[in-house]
Length: 268
Image 1 (cartoon, rainbow, N blue to C red):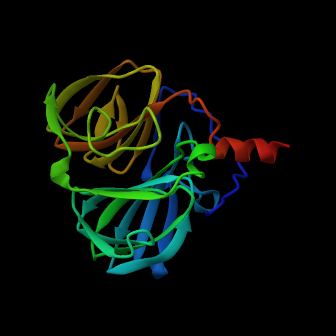
Image 2 (image 1 turned 30 degrees about the vertical axis):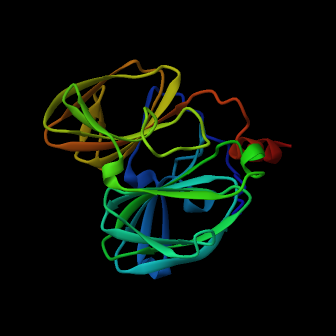
Image 3 (image 1 turned 180 degrees about the vertical axis):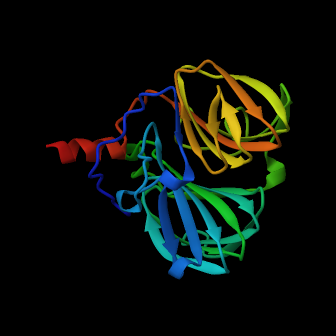
């Protein structure tokens, strides 16, 4: 398992709407820049303002400038999700022992459990999110690893107040997780003003995938990462089509996360 000690304290979210533009996110690259990543939530060596919170541990937007492979590497405990935003990726892991393709709109989850190794191949111009979730490592490190692929058509789509919502996890969607209390979805909308009611017990983590939007009059440009809490009524305004990738997670967890344990250890 890649253990990364956090030398900085976790940033306390003291704003109801916190916006991290792409320029202030972390950065990473593979194979001499063949694959580049901006990281709303990264490791300390990646730089950037975003640090783990709730049960979100890591979030990267990866883009393949040319066809390239991230070689076999191990994971334990965490749940690792990949969402294909463009093109095709192929995935190999030591449980399936085979390469499996995923296309635009598809998703996968690795529940790393006691341990699993995997590799990823990205076709040229492929784009994906990779998101790590801490589901309570004290439990998952005792479980066997498991893996699932999901196709675009597997995910339910509905329209609410002019927003088309594709749900990946939660609300009866098929992607199941050990991490409780999470909802993962995409919100598509055209030009206009839209309203959403939020749960005050949740933190909303939003990546602006397309368009520049106003969220309660706060401007979030494309590729910005937005963290919202203690907001009940959200007004979304845009001058053209927009798309948001949205994760809601519990504000208060019933267990200590890995990042919190590392913070406590560093404070001793």
